[in-house]
Figure (cartoon, rainbow, N blue to C red):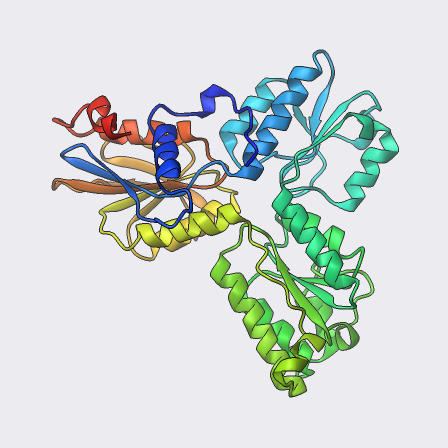
Length: 407
């Protein structure tokens, strides 16, 4: 696999060697057991897979190359390159300006850009409309495209089945940059509708079977369907693709549900299924799958608490939090700065959509068992900072150098 030039300040003297050790000793990635660091009064269980993925490393490599290769030029990012506050903050400090926010709201007008400006496309990709804007400006010559190859794979899959007269059902968060980009590309080739979850999928199924009046479709899926969408005609043949960072089990469940609806509604024999439902293999990226599988394996062990690091608007990270909080007290934090002291932690509550402070999150007994993982856009250095900060609360803990001798 291609290697990338990642700035040293994103790497870690603890986490990076552990990852490399596990990779060398498990090249086929069959061992999903966590790495255990035993410091005596505290033990850390670190997920087998986490942190920067191929797409994120590719984006960082290209973005920093754009900065290095264009001294003195104005450099713009269409929106956040990845959903990590540390990375985006560093790019801003280096002079990069954001054209839009994560919701697609314009921060800098297109008219302010010139053909001489550098434009970076984020890892999530961008819409066809934005691509056309860049071309109209004449800035395409100076465009650095960091779109993740696995996102492009989804676009290609949607195009392939769209050309076979299937309607595209995109499983994703409607307002997420990647889903907006996928929707934009998909609707170029086929009628397209976005479903966010199983609840919306079940509603969509009622339009497939005709048990819900078609006129209601446009309210139920407001801003989630392509222009000219006809629920009576366009839901007779469908295929499912997805935002790459969704929970694999959720995407599979949605695809299976719609497939079974088609089979029952049209009384399909096995050899007839593809007449109505496209055979799309799972389009989740490998890193999303690996991180989620590693989290499932992590959760088979015992722990007192879990700390998940990453950007609060990171989809793949939020799904890891969902998995962990089903079993253990889970704290979703952006960085080590959220660990206020041994007794207080500021963390993001996904249900309230706000940061809250929890007291006495570390139990009084020993040894304390703490699970650590993070999203695909979180640097190793952030995880190291969290580990070192937590470790500092335990008197008599073994030195890091002693514990790291095995790696």
